[in-house]
Image (cartoon, rainbow, N blue to C red; front, side, top):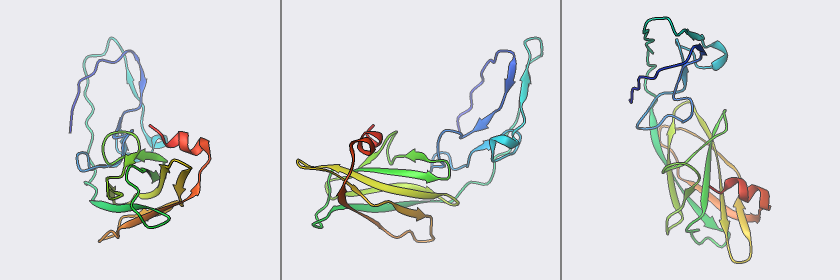
Length: 171
């Protein structure tokens, strides 16, 4: 984990760890708020005053979440791989989109394949979008949860999508 020392202005703060990303191989922890809460409503505020001497607050890390790689394929309705399709992986609850690499939607390889890291205790919603010369296609939503042996996922592009959903999925 990375640690940073930050100077704060006088105010009240809520401190969170891993608040803007999902657990991953690099940071295998759920979101946690100081002193030891999993939701922001139960977090304790910390008051910082200019005249107070330096003070530190320690996080007690929860147990690392178990993660597994989940693999999938995006196919066109004729069964051919959809190379370059965008796959949107959204964590439930929280509706935080994740990607296999970096921020934004994942893109399938030449065989229509993609993968992402799933964490125990988190369900996911997957959809795929693809632009052909004639249509913007999308798949039906598939829900996924981490299993001892994750099954490969197949997303089939069939229904023309509307422009708004396509724009939301674009990075």
